[in-house]
Image (cartoon, rainbow, N blue to C red; front, side):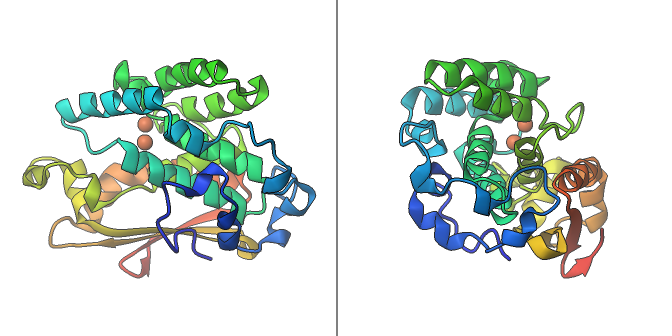
Length: 269
Ligand SMILES: [Fe+2]
Ligand SMILES: [Fe+2]
């Protein structure tokens, strides 16, 4: 079932009960996964109202200020959008992925938190930003009173989100990898005039639609892309995204699923 029937990214992973409507009844999907099935885990109403959530962090002016500054630096050196819209999509995908696979709601919430903070270290430097993001997240979450065990889960996921040195180390980590690496989209290009010069801009600009779906019973996660081949050839996508897709497949395998890639209605992976 679809993870993205709607784009309520701003409020969804924060713990609002209406999200339960979108959970894709995958009770059997928990079998074989690295975690307890949803049925054995607390519902949202059983979770502490004081817990740190995506939404609380999303409304935190200090955190938003840091995220905006990090994205501004990336804009300065010519990178695609890594701001709040990218972070919201990543959080939403990671959150829904774990929920739809029948994993505990709190684990899905931690994936959303990791999604929000995973690129914040670009404030320090683009190189090794997963590590600087993780260390910044540790401090920010500790200051806000998150339990240390939960911080450890979030930080481990953030530090492992990049394809250069990262590996899926937990369910939250695997969900973050898939959420981040699947975010290829036209709206991430800041300056369309650059598409003739930069392959990343060109491929992102060509991606008119990007959708992540999960079929728990088939243990299958599918990324579907519509690529405008007048702008970029599918080969170009593979040129820069093959490594990311390989990492995403390892992440899907960690969740006891396979990863399938469909481009322009043709299965290519
Ligand atoms: Fe990143
Ligand atoms: Fe990212």
